[in-house]
Length: 84
Image (cartoon, rainbow, N blue to C red):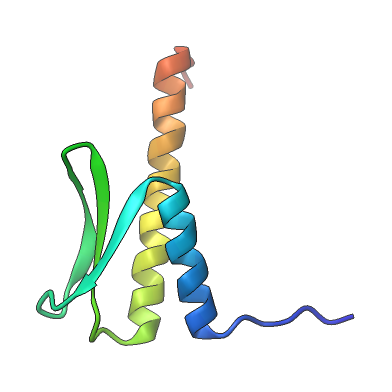
């Protein structure tokens, strides 16, 4: 049985959901053709210009999720006192 390939829009929605679960707010708007991640008052914000091509949005969201995952792993190590 073949697995269903997700469309680009479905992949973007899935990444948005996963970022929200990680505690980030994803903001879409007119950001001058830009996007990125920032921390504001202890909340991670992922901003995406709504006019960016879907492929770039996908890369931006994947990068933000990877960054937040690494950040969470780093915080977990610091709290438990583990060292590499």
